[in-house]
Length: 207
Image (cartoon, rainbow, N blue to C red):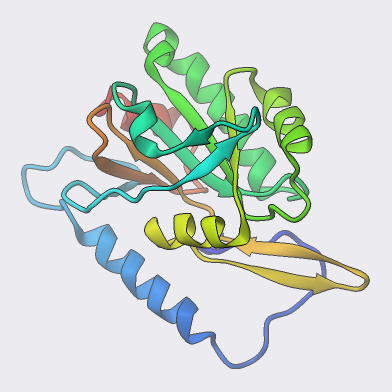
C-alpha cells in the first residue's frame, strides 16, 4: 500500500526519528478524512473534505501569468503537487487524469487540471510546460519561488521535502489529488491508489 507521502524509488532513506512536521501533517489529514462523513454524505472512494476550507496559491503559469485558485472559479479543479523528475508517482497521477477525462466524456470540458511543482529549482517554465503538455495540452503547470511554493503547499496541508541522492536530489511529496468544485470549495482528496474509474465516480458528485 502506498503512503500518503510516497517517495519515488531512489535508494535514499529517511532518518530514524520521525519528522514532527510530518506527524503534524499526517494528523491534519486524518482529521480532514473525517470531515463531511455524516450519514447523509454520498459514498466516495476518496476522502470527503466537504466543509473544510479550500487552500489557495499565488503562483505563475508557464506563460508567466500570476494565478490564484479564484482564477479557475466556475470550473471544477483537480489539483496535484509534484515535480517533473518524479519517476513514478507524478506520471501515474497525470496519466490517470487523462483516463479520468476520457471517462467523463463531455463533462470533462468543465474540468481544469493543475500541476503545482514542488521543485521550482529545476522545473523551469519551459520544462514544466513540456512535461504537462506531454500528457494533455490542457493541463496547467504552475510554479513559484521557494516561498510561494511553501505557502501553497502549507495552504493545502501538503508535505514535501528535498531528499539527497548522491550528487543530486529527489523530492518526497504528498500523493493526493485535491478536487475543488466550481464554487471554489474543497470537496475531495483522491487517493493515489484509486483507479481512474473510482476517481471519475467521485468527480461526478462535483461536476
